[in-house]
Image (cartoon, rainbow, N blue to C red):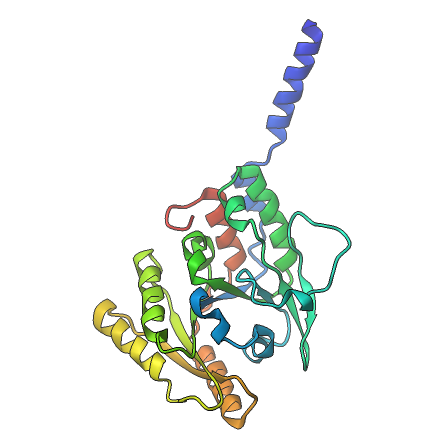
Length: 274
């Protein structure tokens, strides 16, 4: 009986010794795989005002080594290739659009629970995520504003935020509220605005201009307007996409270490990020 108890105790001690420490895990995360990241924040209340994300996202993503981490769940599930097995964590999938293909990492439905869960579960998730994203130089992360409180591990790891401005009368008010939440929760980096409109709508960026003015007057923030995306493929839309690309290239200050910073935020559960 004593031998059984001793053996069991040895197994418990060995298992404890074999568990990877946060320091050991972070030491294994390569710092040489540079990966820039942009968070695309959508007002959940008005998500129906936006065109299907695969119809326009390719115009702003890089053509090579770019991945959309669709944590907002905006990509139509019917477009995602079916798998015969149920995996614990999501893996990247190739999605065909009307003109080309994009790489999508689908929404991890229980991400908030994972991030707040036991340390070893967090490390297992991060190890799979690092494997999923290690070969990409750009990651675009879709997030809905109702999940911002649980998304600050992402927010404080990205190079910049782009707030999606819907074609809706209440757009300016809603987007200003989102900007205020970001500011009040310690996000002080670049915030950009990308406005959406239907073909027959006013294309003067009126919502963007209102948001910029109020943010400047009440928060002292200089937001950047990146132009507009129209719901149809017109010459004006091509110009706005070009403006987005050129302006984003001019203003971005890439930190290029998204994966490591995100891993660090989740492993240590740094206050303000979890």
